[in-house]
Image (cartoon, rainbow, N blue to C red; front, top):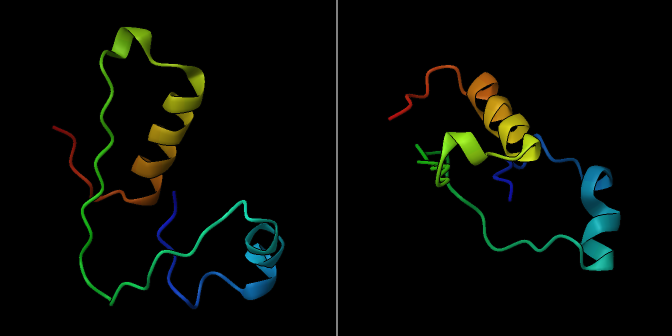
Length: 67
């Protein structure tokens, strides 16, 4: 899952994945606020991949708030 602005995703960055069907473009969002939720059942059973992804989201969006 990715939400990319058109200026940040150069065609060469994702062209091969689009051509091979690994990525699918599902629409274009206007420049507006977007809510992103990361839900998982328990911190005790979080996989390392999910932990890395969660940390990346929090680093990328430092103003995000966790509930």
